[in-house]
Image 1 (cartoon, helix red, strand yellow):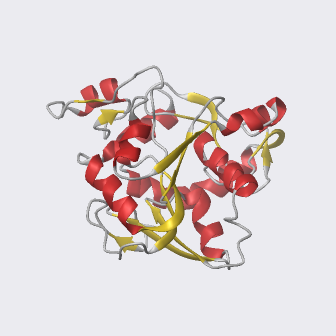
Image 2: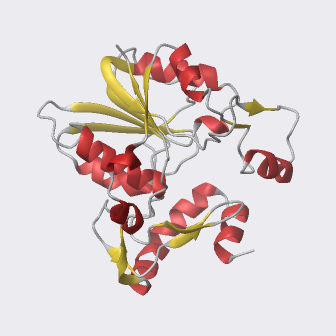
Length: 256
């Protein structure tokens, strides 16, 4: 087992987040180079770090922002296809389980009123259960909730809450680890052993594996869902340079 895989599987996530603020600048300096670039901060490296709780993906984790493939893809989509960074109207944004790679950038954007929420994350503003969010109906212009729902036993209730707090006319991005070869989502509440969960669900703290029906689950609570393969719009040389995962689908959800 590689050192990165061992760390991921043994150290609780809140401690990992705190430790990363100390270790990250040292790793970024050590790996500085010109082969790969993180589009979030524009910094380049001779390689990215491997990442994964099971089989590790090479060149997945950016040394500078700690972004993964999915974060870099979402950044490019927001920058190129939305007014998230350019809106003259102040956007109220809710970010569930905020990722470090976005946190400071989004907080410092003058066109955003940015609120983060999570039950466990030490970097979130509001400690809250996603199935019982302490926010008003139709409160947010934008909602992000990435790689969260696979951890939530009652994901239908969580989706309903995301829909409730999103404004009519607003949009959200709700990424999940998804097996596109699987038609239907698989879950089994009787599987509680962490090793078995990791083997079956891909990670020790996941409770299901989503299939292609994930998008219809979101539609079932009211969202209009675009299944966006944004990698098709990105030149092959940039897919490689930004270390993106070809064919990854962005679930972009709208409340009409």
